[in-house]
Amino acid sequence: MKALDELTFDNRFARLGDAFSAHVLPEPIDNPRLVVASPAALALLDLDPATAETEEFAQLFGGHKLWADAEPRAMVYSGHQFGGYTPQLGDGRGLLLGEVYNEAGEHWDLHLKGAGQTPFSRMGDGRAVLRSSIREFLASEALHALNIPSSRAACVIDSDTPVWREKQERAAMVLRLAPSHVRFGHFEYFYYTKRPEQQKQLGEHVLAMHFPECLEQPEPYLAMFREVVERNAELIAKWQAYGFCHGVMNTDNMSILGITFDFGPFAFLDDFDAHFICNHSDDQGRYSFSNQVPVGQWNLSALAQALTPFISVEALRQTLELYLPLFQAHYLDLMRRRFGFTTAEDDDQQLLESLLQLMQNSGVDYTLFFRRLGEQSPEQAVVRLRDDFVDIKGFDAWGERYVARVAREGDAGQEQRRARMHAVNPLYILRNYLAQKAIDAAEQGDYSEVRRLHTVLSKPFEEQPGMASYAERPPEWGKHLEISCSS
Ligand code: AMP
Ligand code: MG
Image (tube, rainbow, N blue to C red; front, side, top):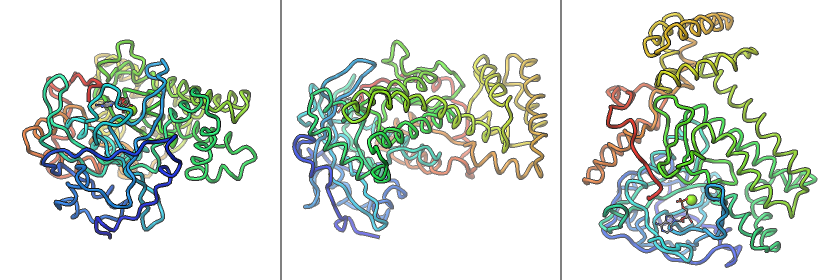
């Protein structure tokens, strides 16, 4: 374990130079104080969780203090936002403080979100409000606990600095960790500004730091692109399998590492709804739940376009074609596991689709359905679950097929089946209304609910004593909370 002043920096991205990022110091927030910290994320930096409670911690991550070896930089990138190209974006309210390497030899970017204005702030104030910082923190750590690749979050720091959105709110900062903060939009930026030298420098950096195995391939850039396609197919399969809706899949929010990145108006589904739009500002539903699958491919084609200086169009096209089949294979595999199947049958896809249709028509809670399916024997489970469906006859027919399908698995017993299913079907997810309750309390200065929710979500598959209220469907007020981009 290390003390805060013992972190070791190696700022590889900063060394790329001023064409890639600008030196900017964090602008401190008033009276910084800890809202919540993630012991598991701090451990990635070899930090003892107790350090989070110190004055120095709040000073560092509230922008008042900086390590001598940190080199805070705002990165430049661009990207396609809602389908249209924006020539310059960049870190408008976040800074890459530096890259830390831990005792295991891993590098972690320390990114302080809400750190004040930068040359890329455009009209923005460079700040993040408390509510969106709490949401990013909870989501990053919750996704990680669900085995869904994501950037991590080490802490949230609250303050007395006022910021204006629709109303006056408080500024906060969140410390985000990721092995890299390079986005699809980084490659787009150098491609569209016609700077092949820098684009090559960026490509070589990403290859060497994050895809070293691709350097052994005859065409390293193609191998890297293929890897990005594969990782995204798998990532989006996980989002779809667990009902995660990102909300703003612009190419500047897509990580080159294929991890969930840049949280805004995201949501986990309560009731299953393929057409769910979590972003209140997304009038056309471009980023609706089911559209995430084709949008993933659209985003990869935007990246492919930016990589045309390195890879032939034909090779890019062929690689892009891998996305959908890979997605489908991962998705079906995950859903089979959620059903408790260890074998594959041709009809499984159809069994799944007809269930989702029934759920859609009846507004069935997506998470609880699967949890309950494994709780009891298949015969008992379908009897318990049928009352949730409007089309009871339709569900009974489905239930019969499911029971017969489970029988062909030849399970040793219900105990074994339950354990297997509970290991992939969470009891607790980050429901919007749970986040909102925690945020309301935090805005009143009480951080205990954020901390409790974080603890519950860090073990989503394990039933925790006294926490039954975190595994319930939302109350009426919590069903359709409007979340927009103004964060
Ligand atoms: P986001 O929607 O958070 O992914 O942000 C899109 C772009 O707007 C990024 O370049 C952000 O840095 C920038 N941005 C968002 N909010 C602010 C803000 N309050 N101040 C400055 N820049 C911002
Ligand atoms: Mg963004």
